[in-house]
Structures are given as structure tokens and as C-alpha cells.
Image (cartoon, rainbow, N blue to C red; front, side, top):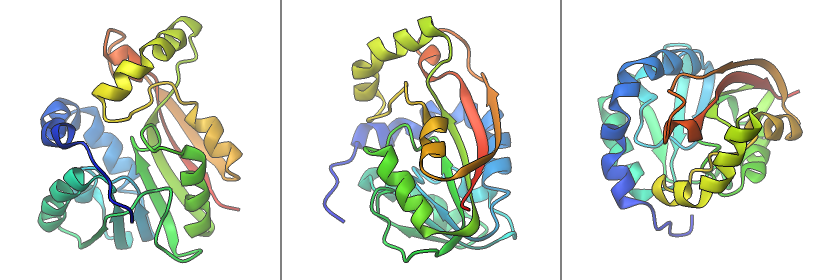
Length: 212
């Protein structure tokens, strides 16, 4: 893949910034989303590897990709510590280096907010999924409240700079549906408080989408 500049400071602080959430609600979420992945599994945007300890014996083989070189280095350490073998590659969701219909499951947790091209990323997910395969996802999305959504729009430039390219106002469920995947399960939640900066990353959505 082409050289990726990466976000050195964000990668260096990410685990500490998210530690409280990872000990709380995110541990449950990751156990559900990653823990339910079956067969040949691909995780896109693995970050520092927070999902790695949650894969179970249902996952016959786990491949994870992460484009940011600084995140990737930290993911390597987490992969080495994981109970299951994790095959880690530096690659982006927009250009997956895998053959068509290679995977039974794709896992995406807090990824589609930060990819440069969500439509292209989901096109790649559809391509590498087998027919009947699952995209198991957990994302924060655009608020359904017009006032909150407007606040997300206004704050987007600053938030993208602060959060390494994260978009706080993407309508990700609609984008998943428009990719051709069938959203079979979807559940909305508001696990973080409605105050700045958390109001920018509410609500959250957990779901499963199927390739027909």
C-alpha cells in the first residue's frame, strides 16, 4: 500500500484515552461483536487491537488490517499477547489485499467514521465477503436530533483534527444499506453522556448486515 503518514500522537494516547470505556461498556460490545465472529474473519481498521482478546474458537482464522503505521505497531503488540493467532497486515479498508469471497465475517468497530471513503470501504467489504457472510459492526453515527446533528456538522473540522480524521456526523447505517448489504439486526444506544465532547459521538449503533 502507499505510504500512510499516520497519527503518531493519537496512536500514542488512544489506549489511555479509551481505557475507562474499554473497562466498561466497550468490553461488553467487543465480546458481542468480535466474540460472535465465525469462520474466516477479517477485521478492518483494527486500531491498536482492542478486539483481539475477544475472538473465540468460533473464529477459525482472524486476519486484521490497519493502515496507520503508529496504530499498527501497537496492534502488533496486542496481537502477540492475544490467546488466538491474529494475522495482521498494514492495509486500508478502501483497498483490501484479498481475493473475492475470502471471508465469512467482517468486523468493524468504530472504523467507518474515520475511513476516507466509506462507500469504497463497504464496496470492498461486500467484495471479500462470501455470499451469506456477515458484517458485524459497532459505530457512532449522526444524531437523529436536528440540534445535535447541526452541532456535529459545525464541530466536524475541529473534531476531525482532534480525533485523527474521525467524522462525527456520518449516517453509517444508511451507507451500509446502500452498499447492497442487508441490515438484519440493528440496535441503537447512547452509552456516553450528552455533554461536550461526548455529544459529538452519540448515538451508537450495533448491528449485523448480510451479503446476499
